[in-house]
Image (cartoon, rainbow over all chains, first blue to last red; front, side, top):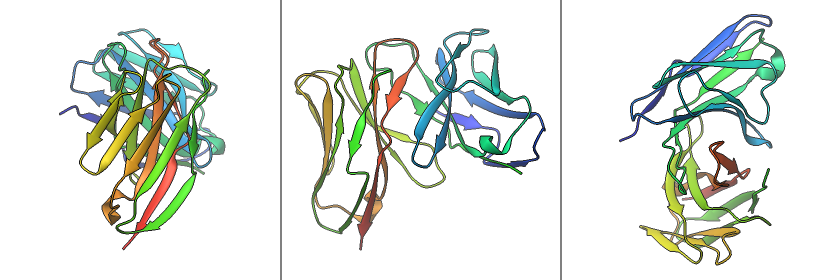
Length: 114
Length: 111
């Protein structure tokens, strides 16, 4: 079974703090993704990576950065957390296989910025 | 960016009833996935459909991909409380940037 793990299930941070969210997958997937999920807005893609050290902006990259130093690990960084970044953050991974592009998700991190 | 519209947004029915939820787009997708998400958890992949007109069954769940690969439906027979959750459809456009997600259907099955 594909397993995607995220470093924290719940996180509370203060405005202005630097926040690191870690994601690890054990299926040797090429692609990794970070989404945020908010009520009424659905899942929105923040960043994705299709290879080590490669990154691409998604639909809402402002205020975030990412790092992929190893194939199995993809980190999301909030440089200076703000209250509007309070959200559910979901990491996903997939093989670079057409046409399915099946993504497998981690359990999510519920981040609250106060 | 292609859009996926899901309907209904919310659905609450009694145990034992049948239901259908829809996922529609004006654009063509190379494949379409359905996920179920429970509160506080990540989405779990249920099925992928690839060929226009394809029908897949997963126990009491039947998934269909439209002939033109622009839409899909999920039919649940004899719904059970364990079917409760957020059902998401997601379409692949063929690039490496992943999937386009619909906003989901919140399904509640009352015992």
